[in-house]
Length: 542
Ligand SMILES: *[C@@H]1O[C@H](CO)[C@@H](O)[C@H](O)[C@H]1NC(C)=O
Ligand SMILES: *[C@@H]1O[C@H](CO)[C@@H](O)[C@H](O)[C@H]1NC(C)=O
Ligand SMILES: *[C@@H]1O[C@H](CO)[C@@H](O)[C@H](O)[C@H]1NC(C)=O
Ligand SMILES: *[C@@H]1O[C@H](CO)[C@@H](O)[C@H](O)[C@H]1NC(C)=O
Image (cartoon, rainbow, N blue to C red):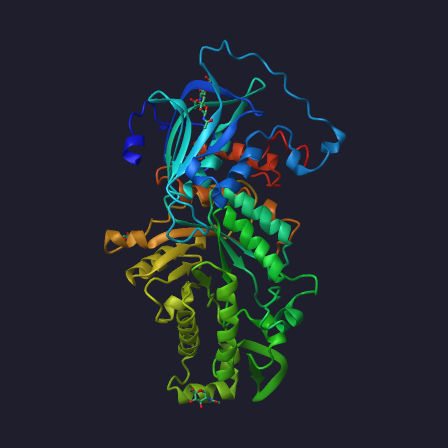
């Protein structure tokens, strides 16, 4: 199928020096893109996305067609729901372009076909698609084909290809074969340091879909608050949320999961332990380690989860059973980062427990003892897991297909080398902590990262890098700024993880990223400016 579709290519989208020629302003840049000057008009009142007969009724596809039918011809910034300061945006005069020498006629439909109908995107799913719009060898019409999930990515591309020209909707003759360079392309949002309202979590999922990202890493709880409402342990949020209103009910969680599912986005929830759990202790007395000072317990002073108690593991078993059921993805993120040993050190019961285990004084071994029990629980629940790099560093025996998440700054390349040498798959976040902000076009720093720029002992180890993740930690971010701070900066990471390795020119990225920002604004995502002075059609309305 693909070899047949791959046939004659006329002009490639190529870089000549710093100038990228013959490219539409797509984001992220497709793997193979070939366009020419022949263009077609589209009539919004009659143009149709047509699903192959045997796929009619496939929910994911039908819903995608419904979404993109609306996104294709947005002319009036209408999704921003404001009145643009009372100004009516002028409607562009429609010029007759049918005499243009490059005019190729009207495009009536895009036909869409796949091999299957699926419900959940997984870590194994393919996202490849081919898209052709009346190319010389396929002059009849426009067609989008994919094994399955690529249809969603291809519809996004198609929607970006449809542009305005002298008041008309047009699309150039186009041939695309496209697929992601990395299968795991994530965004982390942190809903513990500040609460983020559900509608903004959904908006972030839209933004991810517009950038072909496919994993929402939901850092849902932490020291500061526990907004997840557990039906097994309702006290966790009752006592641990900032406020009774600042929670995610089971309905909220399923809203997020469903919104992500139909967009081909996995949701991986993180329940980080044994550190980062102060908010957990409020609802579950006895869960956390009591800290001591000068041989006496200090009232109200707690450390990481107490690994010495059997009750700890009974609790974890029940909670993670609920988590495993609630979040359908194959993976749960188990955290395991930044465990502070000082409280364990101060507690005489912990120390005598360690003595009984033959690990006197070795607090990293105690952490491993805990995490080993936790990963064993995950095995009984038949869930795979992602862990922060410390868990690997401390030598916890992980299942061979677990994923190690590299986050520490500094020489992260050496860490990547170690993780893949250990045979583990890995995702990279170190260079993509978008919560650190600075003046100017910092997206370029994210853009310039080459995830495979590290040393390996055998080339196959590079295949263990399955992707990366842009992180937006929540200490200084809430509903007011989470979208504008994450986007369009995360788009730089999105293109790095999707596009070919040699798509690195900042000069060619700038106009495409500008277009992406304006397009996202038009679609109602309040993305922040990243290139200095400029304007967008729809920034008048935000
Ligand atoms: C699309 O068509 C227009 C009009 O013919 C032409 O000016 C433009 O260069 C074409 N774009 C690409 C990427 O080929
Ligand atoms: C799509 O449009 C073409 C005309 O360009 C037409 O021949 C074809 O039948 C249409 N396909 C469907 C399924 O309507
Ligand atoms: C905890 O469980 C272990 C193993 O099942 C058992 O040997 C130990 O006595 C238990 N400890 C307590 C305090 O119940
Ligand atoms: C790879 O190894 C070489 C030779 O030891 C070293 O010079 C280089 O800095 C290493 N590259 C990275 C990215 O660590």
